[in-house]
Image 1: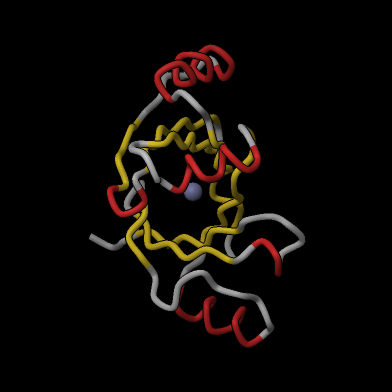
Image 2: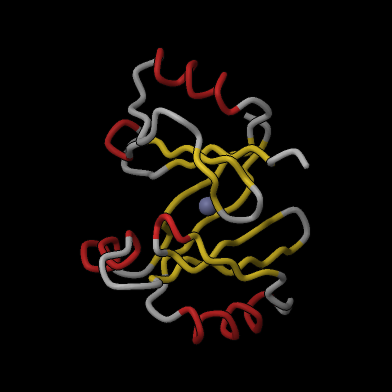
Length: 134
Ligand code: ZN
């Protein structure tokens, strides 16, 4: 683990939340991106070392829709940057953490990602992410 890379926040209406966070952080959203595989729309903000990812639902049945139904808006996950995602997946699986994927998948913001089930991480959804090399 290198550092906390970003905090993911689930929102009901991304179009409303983008200007809200632009005002809150006093900085423009620098990127919006669709993750087709999850039916999720994302928006990113950078403030100093810290990054926020807003997650909105893209279409009926998406993972954020299910999350909002169960838990409502709020902090969705913590993402940690890693230098070797496969090595971290192997290490954490061996230590008893439940991984939600067996292979890294392509996430937003040019990253390989893997999630850990919150039931093995004290209720917090954890994302591992590694920058995709060009
Ligand atoms: Zn994330």
